[in-house]
Image 1 (cartoon, rainbow, N blue to C red):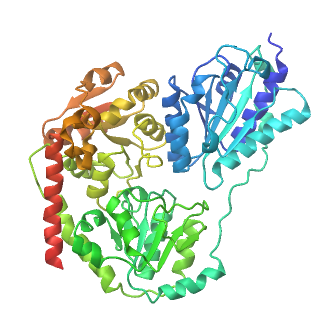
Image 2 (cartoon, rainbow, N blue to C red):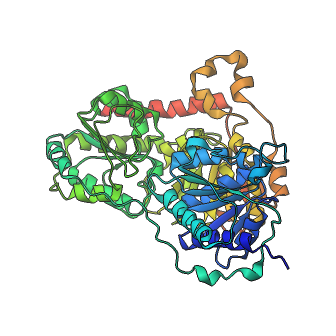
Image 3 (cartoon, rainbow, N blue to C red):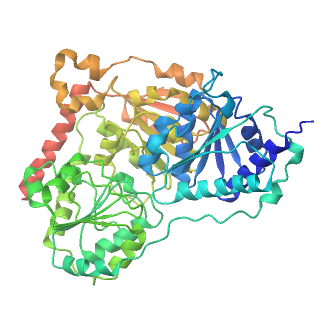
Length: 575
């Protein structure tokens, strides 16, 4: 019998308290030094354990679970470079404000800096990307150390959730023997946990009331909803917009474009509207009320920068300063939902202004153009235009960066279906996209992942989670054989080195990869085929990958610009 009681009691107290504090999922990568933590987690009666071999993929998978559930997820690995592979996902979690509790096993102090294998400096490994770092004590079976383990666990959950939500890193130096004594564990003793404190819901400060009184004198105001996912927010911001009479420019990641809430004031074609120089000038606002991170649309960012609004309010409960324009006049550190409700109560409903009506009319004029047919096949924007109608009620969409998120911004229009839209827009990278989407998929009804071919290639290891856990996901690859977004950028004019440095064609047959992971693969050649494969995939219980080969990357730019030019002509005629 293993008599390693100190190790067992110490780590069981930590894990039991962490679960009582609210952690429901842990993602584990196999390793030796993390053995006692991994075994005890697997032994816990309610903790859901997910095994992902590649640590980079594991971290993004955990990110996805936390992103979908709003709940902190634990992440466990062994010592050495295993933890360094977490770094990209930790950066994304920090910028996206996603709660992760990173648990790294380590060599004990006497085996550090002496040439012991698999020993690196793990102290504060993630630097400022971790909200809180703790070098845990060597396990002891004493009342004070057991209480210490529980206190750190409780505080770790609380800290990861407190605004802004983010990453906590706990480093566990562990001595051999590493196998716990299962007979010494009584999980039922952990039913009453410590109190977990999270950030409060701030109310509207009385000093702000005069500002809102002044806002009543400004008709040219807009509400900008950037990436923001909060239960009840779409309904609350819609009610505020109606009371104050300002249109809502809703980024697809704001969750305001889809659902049963009122969309009377929602503008979903603003990026195309702002491509008209005349419209851009005439729609510059005097008041901006902004929620969430900066929107995907570059033109909307330029409108914010060039408007020089009299009042530019950034509402952010997390007490951040998310304003790259450096033009905000007020940062209101208040719960976004409460802000909408309390501010709406200060206004009497009035008819929308001529300014608001101009936004709405422009939106009505642009939308038919954005829905118009350009070609029989091969236009990348058509992937979104054909996909969105196929999404079922309550189904979720995860979008890769570069061109897919921009096409979703342009072609995902308001609907009643309650489609939740996800993306890794914290650091805007393409790494870990498949893994994150599959993490989200563990908590969502059904998920569709829309990515480019390079993004898909970048995280092929992530497909393993679908195979291991039979996660039914539909992945749509927009394959233009390279980095399509660079064709829209100035470096596209530098033809001599463009393909080598930016186009980066890789000529891969992804069907063989999908087969290796036990999924089905289809390469479609028409929209009828596309719709048949997509709707059929929703009935599948496993991985379904659908590849859409699109136009030459340069032709795709031409098709996008042709559509925008038609829209601008219609807008200029309206003016």
